[in-house]
Image (cartoon, rainbow, N blue to C red; front, side, top):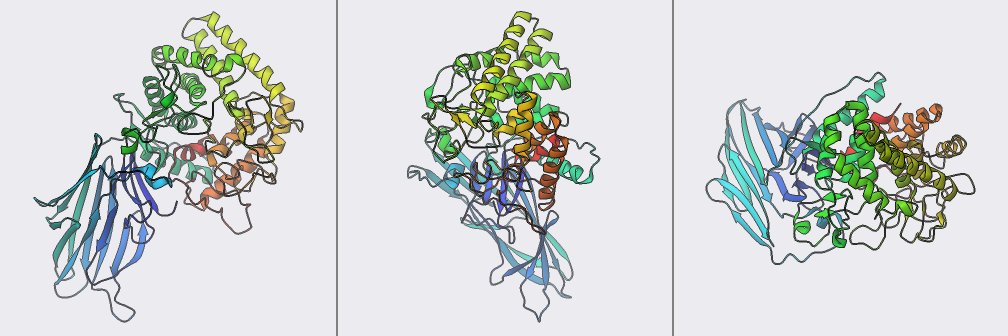
Length: 596
């Protein structure tokens, strides 16, 4: 994604590169809770073109473009601060003339209240029944929107007071000789969310330290309050499209950040237990004990025109919930929370062994439910394919979900014995994990020794060579000999682009370096593979891949993006960005925390 983003929890300002305006011609805007509250925010000086001299975190410096042969009479420094449901933008005008001058300037403003699903997809939605109002009375500009019970408002206040009209506001500024005047607008939205902050640890390798610091800063910006769970916080998945509760993303991010931000794990566990499936509802793929995929509060989700208001289309969030619960206890020793979440843990295991399908062999998902086709982390419709490009037919058992299930069972078995005083259940869970490991070694081992991407409905191994094998390695599901074969393959140049691990190894028919899940490089996916390699003794391979990932981060200010293309690294050149990558993005921000 081009442009610049500033994030605070579920609030995000996404602007164009030049000048920092919001034009609404693409996907830029001021967003809160999946809704675009400003689709136009353009600084305007009538009769004058502003030239941007500098744009960085300290602000945007611009001057009237007077050409090469005249000095600019004044400069404007434009600064922003984004907090939960709120944007404050200040303009600092400094005059350079020996006499006073009058400067006319203002903002062009508009709010279309577009839902993020409208902006992200090619789909169209009939919103002719929407009621839109603009109020420019009382010195304040207000935009309001209502449709089918969904209501939002955007309110703009100016300081000092400005002349307000339906499409913006304007000041006439008397700028004293060589003086400075500050103007300010405050944009607030309804309903307002909240956020919190955090700390920074010490890391000794310089490039890793820089990447960790940036990642933790991004996690702090993405930290959001837990809806309906007072005092809890958890990571939003990413800006600008995923600033909400995401089961899988919040769980993996919290797992990566466990030693640095344990409060994220505690909050994530509490929120996901509170939203755990209670009944069978096919319209949102809900089943008892199942952990949620995502929640949305935007218009289309509220009105039911997309199924994501409370959506359970994920096969892996439930075992990941159990993985995080066990890991959180190992790190924190928090018996109280683990005791309180025992019912949720038992329900999650019940889902895995029941509707999830584990008692019949493996965790599986159907591909004909509302919403997403695939319910694994590679959730694009074309992601689960054979090596010849043929799409796998569901119900599907993806490899990494079985790895997560193995760790979930073994971790929960420890809690059952140590905390919940249920040794019989602990043994049952351990035996179930051992049986899964034995079956997996038979059914998922390809003739060349690599791990199958999945099993299709007929139980046929989906033979595309994919990065999912790195997750299986990380989960400890492979015996030593098999792990050695898999580690060597993951570290070869078909997988390793020089920057990270491709989601699909190059050279296969379905591989495409610009594909979201069939060849792109995801830092979190790469970091999981690195952690798996290091944990199984392949440290040289792990460090080589980690070096590539840190080198990629150095090209983007030490911030890892959601995804890069799978194009190979070339001497002197940087990684080729993926055109629609979110940044900052939670599990990418947390990825450096897994590196050796």
